[in-house]
Image (cartoon, one colour):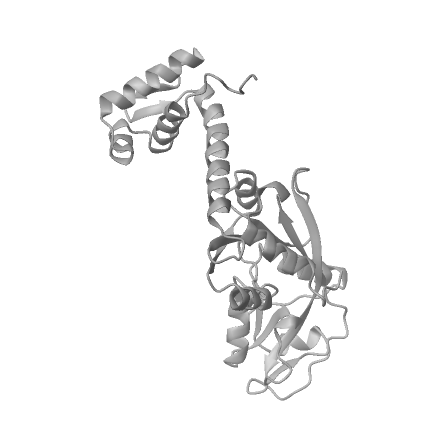
Amino acid sequence: MSLPCENLNLNLYRVFYVVAKTKSFSESSKLLHISQPAISKHIQNLEYELNTLLFFRTNRGIELTPEAKNLVTYVEKAYNYLSLGEQELQESKDLSKGKISIGLPEFSSVSYLNKFIKQYMEEYPSISLEIIYKPIKTLLSMIDNHTLDLIIIPGTIAIPDNLKKVELSKEEYCFAYSKKYTQKSINSIKELSSYKVLLPSLNTVSRKKLDDLLTKYELSITPTMEVENSELIMNYIIEGIGIGYIPSNMIDEDSNIMKASIEEPLPIETINLVYNEKSLTIASKTFVEMLENDPNRTI
């Protein structure tokens, strides 16, 4: 039987990967616990095997050649994939250990996820969860590099063909306020001009959709405050600071938070789940199934 990659020396690629990331032979020597001459020899051997120069020296140290920059992307994916396999082997089938990493675009809200995170942590208390806020392009790259399990993305967005996108919910937005801020009924966007209004930041999906609606109806809102995410806006609403624009599902029926009866139809936002089916571990697969099989799912 012919073995794949018969001449592949994983140790050489390990040294190359660390040097490429640190751009320092001395730092790589400390991390790998081998001498600098040995580091240099490993790089020379890999360059010889590939018949390609991988690094060149500059006044600032060492830099990757264009060929090495291309190579390191594949090496990084390979090592992350190996780490993923190692992680899955270590996760027992009863989920007594493991980790899930969830990506959210910058300035987005975790309000939709809250009940699932709570349920999952109650059912699998030994599994750790990590929430990562990054730009959408970065999150998609992390999924591709196997350093992230899944993404929750609001709105409509194109994704690469190798990823799966599942619509989970339609999220209605509203203007809400605390009874200690005002007892009056608010029925239109025009009436908001008399109050302090808290809106999402300009570069959020929810703010862009709201601004589009205001333009359509030739209306305008001058915010007293622009806030990065819905959780912060909700905190300010509770404190009686003003009227905030938030997802309706954040309002507890038993709370003192009132929902304004705005006559204009406010935007509805789609909540999407994005992941790579081939990269899910036992722990992350269980979480994905919980999201997809939610009996209250509105899609």
